[in-house]
Image (tube, rainbow, N blue to C red; front, side, top):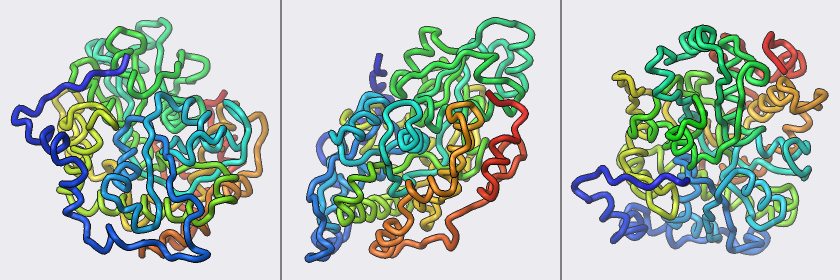
Length: 419
């Protein structure tokens, strides 16, 4: 059911760029020193020279892909081999089994595995955050035609025309499930009692909506914009409007991998931080990134479906267009890539809220176990990246509730709508 790429670029220039020039064309943009320098030898040398990093076909796999394509990884003495996976369940299983070394992965998936929620229990590690923002909740054109275009009007429609409404996310403990649940609950809808939720792999979302399998879905780009381009859906809300600069995908691995390969983990983190900085450095770099990840080996869609939203140029499928300053970001002077403890703790609070966790964990202790703050700081030093002063941050979400990580148990139990 994977979507077939639609070639909307009449000139063919972008496709030619990928087909003929490939990585070589982009490599001319990278200084020779970056391409030829090596990570320090001796005790700092990576234990593994080649690392397999799993990814799902989503725009936010970009920093992993570009670290490999631009050969930034060579600077740190490793070779990153991106491996395309079919679903988040596959990513989880391959991480746990050691079939891949690390992955572009859902933040909440890593925490779920660490606590044995939604699958096997294994000690896990978050090396860095890969991106902020850039996901969306898409509503079907059928709902929109009846007036269901945002949270308020959707609830009015559901009340007026009662039936079983179905909404899809990508993994039970993952980010997209949490954004969907939070948004529905903020509008007074209990996602576990008043609607049906299903799990669908990201590349299959558009095809499933096309045949009427769901009324809406939450997923990463380009599959939100693709539904608009295909005329089958509209944007109900972007996730950055649910939580500005929210954490999204992470570079995840097992605790065993970090313990056995600390230098490799640090080198991999450094290379991907640097790739994220390269992406965010200019609009030109963002375009070149879009041209690269659109290829069949990665996201497998047309460049135009990716490039508009990666440049912050949004349309909602109903005639509204806007420039969104809170589009997908990969670096933002180190604010994106730092693995804040409070970010990890937030997902735990939502797992508790929705009954995925039956009791309150020691939120801060778990976050300190999973998020590799010291290793990240070492990698950031190697890249000369800025590091936030505090491992906690404060955010106000769409319902006006402030999250700061200070009292996670109280926060988790404070919501009127819960499982």
